[in-house]
Length: 443
Figure 1 (cartoon, rainbow, N blue to C red):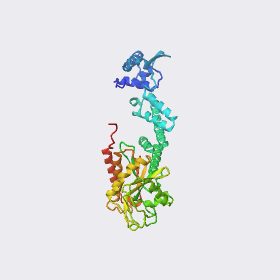
Figure 2 (figure 1 turned 60 degrees about the vertical axis):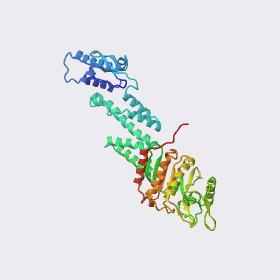
Figure 3 (figure 1 turned 45 degrees about the vertical axis):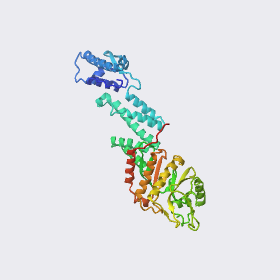
Figure 4 (figure 1 turned 60 degrees about the horizontal axis):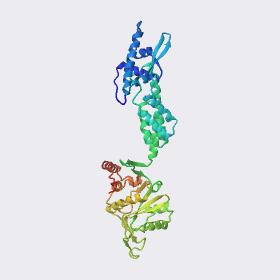
């Protein structure tokens, strides 16, 4: 009572369960004795002794209920009289409010959920299933008087599980629906409907992941690191990162920039081949950046001649999202781009603060930067991918709101030479270290 366990004698516990099974209906003392004591023979003149046995257990129950407060026993366990052919018989029934018996609360919550919208139904069903602690009325489940309520509550739980799967599915939360479906299939191995529901969910999850190869939610943050197989420019819900040289050239003439490069695809696919329009956006973004040097026409006859610092990140608006043009290589006067591991690390370290400032808290998609024409031969594909992840997770230690999702897009040819297990290991290590958040408060 009041959260404390109360020890009852075995017969008294069976009598309580018999009254619970009656679901609020009155039960005669004679019926209670027959169901609880289960006498094998009826002796003559035994009725008075039987009633006394029942009354002793009723008194024990009332004393137990009284531990919740004086008078609770008489309020909860009611006595009545019922005229019968044998004369008036004493009856007993449990008179509980809706929140005093788990089975009643469970029934109400499931009933409310069946009439609710999906989000509310999920909450109600989750609350209801938390009350389930195994098969109801376990100690007397095989007794005739218990079969109907046990069957009703068991069927109601099956309904709750089925509706919880449907609710999560309607909300697009297949990951939450899956363990419920797995539990249902385990409990009902011969039920074709349970097996079919599990198969449908697994198919939905495979379809949702699509080309997704890895997904890791960083502990303590609402930030995901994702690796997908595909095309950078198909990531239409995300800001994009595109690598540039320090001159920010845009002319896709296959001399300065190859049309097959990521920069060339940027011009063709997001700017419809209008490289001057992209150049205008870049010039506006570079107004606040001090140039490092300007090449002469003789030294560099082709392409742009103003050089900017490695690590310069220019946010270019494209509709409602941004393309972050990142200078991570140097374009020599021979029109060959060159970079080094230190250049790439510096560029990535400077990228993430720019994403936090200008990225509108959208997902960010980045290719395996450094794997193309920049001749960054010191790092293999796994090391390039790990460097992107490492600098990103380190940036979260300074600003955990850089973006909600880092999506690294790997092409098929790159994937063959990339070990994703190394990336997983780094992410697990980042979880163990935990985010180091900037101090709060004022001095």
